[in-house]
Length: 47
Length: 450
Image (cartoon, rainbow over all chains, first blue to last red):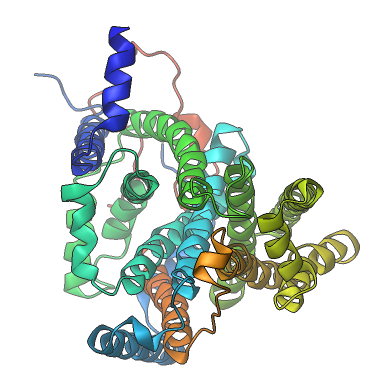
């Protein structure tokens, strides 16, 4: 029932929807930045 | 060991020098883009009354363009991501050309939305006041994520080639371009471990992008499907839009590849066999699209609901009949005959069929959107609508296509349009499957000519 209330609240709340948009995009940006760093660090001499 | 691509010189040739033809083309396309800008400024000053939009036809050519350009964008993801997941190695020469279509069609899809808004400053309202329940919010999120991911996916796969251009073309290109490549290469040095990690990331992103492709166009369709309007409110609208997008996107890839092959002399990198493979895909998608159309209209007309039948009859035998049946012939009738009877080993016929498919798919988007608004559910309250696109909307449409073509043409002169590293003859020699193998300190793989 707790989860049911949570889902119901999500669908009934007014927003702001920008939180969802920014959360998704910022998470994606951080992920891609970390992936880029990981790729470029491949094979570098470990100190 | 060096990555060897026997076509490297051919692929790099377009980057070295601009021709007079390029300058003329860019000027022409830039001129069309400028015309679109003038039309838009006029619309901004005079209001949306200069378009054909009215009550109850609130969405017209601009939204048609939005759906069409987002659909075109699926080409890149389909070729580079979905075929990668499916292990189809023949796709390698096509990936960048297809991804570039994605990259340059998405902004114009978004621009179409801005053009559709009489008050474009209100776009930020979706951030501040958007409701979680709104398909428009889902759309904004999905398309935004798709654009960001497409840029990154393409950039990652471009990295080794940017480094190669940085090293190979030193002294042969202007200083500003040399600097640009040095910055964009992010210090890539071609170590085997970098290639292995890059392949892993691209494999993972390909799976993610495949999910995004399905999500994005389904969410775009839900902007229509979540309303109660006849012809829109159907569970089939998601797969219907998705298949149409993949069809038009793949057809666009055929057109672009044929042009690149002809203009840059890339016959060796883009052999006939690629077009034959795309032909098989297009036959499958065309038949799939036909299935969706039959399922959609048979279900709607069998139910015989008054609101639905008004729209269906408008399309089948009413004011939109010419457009509807023309669309069916252009998307299905003629192209399928061409693919089966003439398309094999013939790029010319493939291009002809693909052009027809794209024209037909643009009409298909229009046919999905406008007739429903002309005869909406609240028919007697809102009255029958009338919609005639004005020259403003048509000029803006032409400028969107010109803008996309311009960005694409400039891109092909700045970056190798065929992935040099992915089509290297000895790329497989890089793969070392053991995860705990320590890479040597000295780079075993060199892309640099030093």
